Amino acid sequence: MKKYTYTEKKDTRSGFGVGLHEAAKKNPNIVALTADLKGSLKMDAFEKDFPERFFQIGIAEANMIGIAAGMTIGGKIPFTGTFANFSTGRVYDQIRQSVAYSYKNVKICASHAGLTLGEDGATHQILEDIGLMKMLPGMVVINPCDYNQTKAATMAIAEYEGPVYLRFGRPSIPVFTDPDQVFEIGKAWMVNEGTDVTIIATGHMVWKAIEAGEQLAELGIDAEIINIHTIKPLDEEAILKSVQKTGCVVTCEEHNKFGGLGESVARLLSTELPSPQEFVAVNDSFGESGTPDQLMTKYGLDTINIVEAVQKVIKRKK
Amino acid sequence: MKHTINELEDIVSQVRRDIVRMVHGCQSGHPGGSLGCAEFFTALYFETMNHSTDFKMDGVGEDLFFLSNGHISPVFYSVLARSGYFDVSELATFRKLNSRVQGHPTTHEGLPGIRIASGSLGQGMSVAIGAALTKKLNKDHSLVFSLHGDGELQEGQNWEAIMFAPHNKVDNLISTIDYNGQQIDGPTEKVLSLESLEAKFEAFGWHVITSSGNNMEEIVKSLEYAKSLTGKGRPILNLMSTQMGYGVDYMVGSHKWHGTAPNDEQLASALAQNKETLGDY
Image 1 (cartoon, chains in turn blue, brown):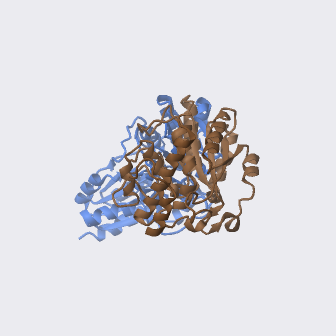
Image 2 (cartoon, rainbow over the protein chains, first blue to last red):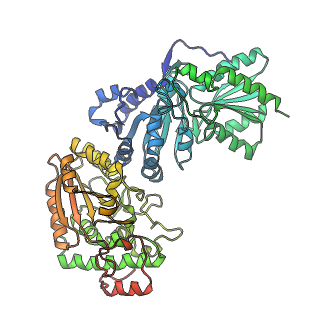
């Protein structure tokens, strides 16, 4: 197992804030919009340095999505920022008609995704957003795994022409990816090469997959770990190549098991390479109040859950 | 003026023929609101707006128009074709398979003149505001126009947009309300009363003007007046009274023709009331 270490923990939303600021320095057409959550989305530096390109929309997410769609007409590249729940479920029809169907170059940037939002509880903890967004034709869906990757992803989507959903979170988690990485949309990252099982993880679950890989190594199981940061378009080639070798797969995501990364992988494998698969994901449930760690444990998204899923899926191999 | 009122009225007559023929041709679509807005669209595209029929999505340096109540697509398509965005023969494909002239306006099939999809109601004002903000950032002094149904104002997103535009001094925007008092299920006053739209928009900080949308001369003057009010710190709201189905006697003023197609006999009657001036498609 390749050794991964970290010297600090940071929130992925801060990676977004820095990435947005960097991208804005390079490209004067980048504009930022928020629905009364500029602090939570770490947009303060953008507002300070580019005040004329910053738009405070107020608590009006539907209007924000529509304004963003309109701003593309004339060449602006709008980045909208609010919580994941208010970035997707609340404004699904606005995104569907004004952004996706109209194919506008809007970047929907969503913080506080999943259970790790914590104490605010289920009204704010969306676990359905990946599913909602990946179903929209033409929508790119990205869920980076740490501060550095989120920063790189933010800069990369600024260069991409078309609608994007960028999902990140609130808690401080280990920073373990390369600070100078080049983010390639739709290209899986091989975290660790192995032969016994393929662990596919996205977002906050990638570090847990690494922890699981270390524990599995002690048990004599050689896990291949792949970071799928781009859920759509899915890097089918990387997944098929890996599962061809290992013969089984465990998918890990901070999302409902229905509609997420796991189902995208299952769809691919069922048609191309039928293989045993286990899902580490929320079991069709809403969340609740609690600390991020408590919630990840209660809802079965911990390192131990990945280890157990691997042991189970390996037994199912023929 | 680029055209005389008589010339514009001749165009309107042809547009009305196009509308009823399109809706009759596929036996679906929305003739009522389309007919009621024939003067408005004709004025906008033949007189008011500075625009190019050499269509470019970004529309830099030209006035832009956004239709929020997308179901009145027949009048939009007719006027786009008649003003030169695409060939009028394409109107015959309205609502048919493999057509660019979809049931509701969309950018998806690349029809020139359409800059956003609309149909699901209440979204157009936000989009128009966005385009107006980009014009300001680009130091582009052209204007943004939009049209909304009165019943459509029951959608909440409008009021988010209506609150936003004056606060942010979006004064390069002229939004028009098609104030015909009708919606699918009946008169707006019965379905969900709009009360005083004039007072509502004024309270939100808009500069409100009223106009008579089925009088060619008046609507041209009203739009010119609206243009003279731009650049003064406030968005402009044109509260335009129209009659649903105007120009076809058996359709006038009735919500029953919101989304119903005429039969052969009714088509003949409608065409007899609107002379062919520019040649049918």
